[in-house]
Image 1 (cartoon, rainbow, N blue to C red):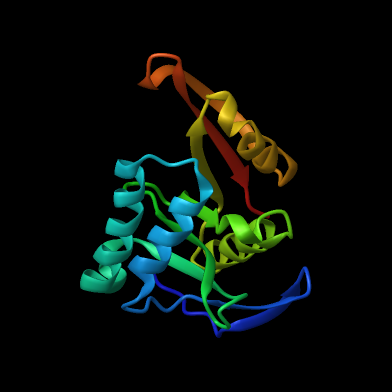
Image 2 (tube, helix red, strand yellow; image 1 turned 120 degrees about the vertical axis):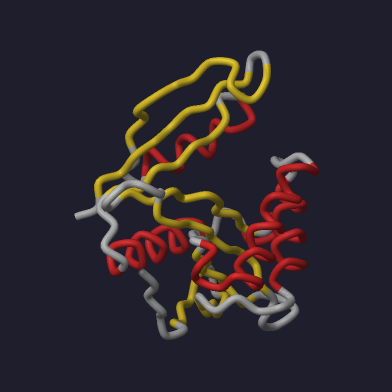
Length: 177
């Protein structure tokens, strides 16, 4: 199922932000710029993030990947954050939140919370009832884990040494109301 949202405008931290769900040909470059700026992701992880956008451009909704892009900032209209999510195959109402990232220059103004809330609203419109998020157990990701906890996600699992020795996978879930 696909739901298209009308672009919506917000003011966050004094910046005019527009949220869109349409994927544009320049979005792979924007996603690379955003994920590289964070300092969190490896080259291969960044390549995967870009590949998901490219897959959506090639396959459309059939890809199963849905995006929200936050455009604003400087240069005017540049994409400064995004989320990627999709239904989990073979489930009735479960979705994965694959990516949520904000350009480092625009972090800590509430843009991540806005993207998450808008993603959850879109998932609800698509019939989703649960959102699953996975992240690393490394100390670098402590702010990420705090972010999810503060936004209503509950840790459901820890798989030790999943990504690498000493780097476990933590799975969070949120029941959408």
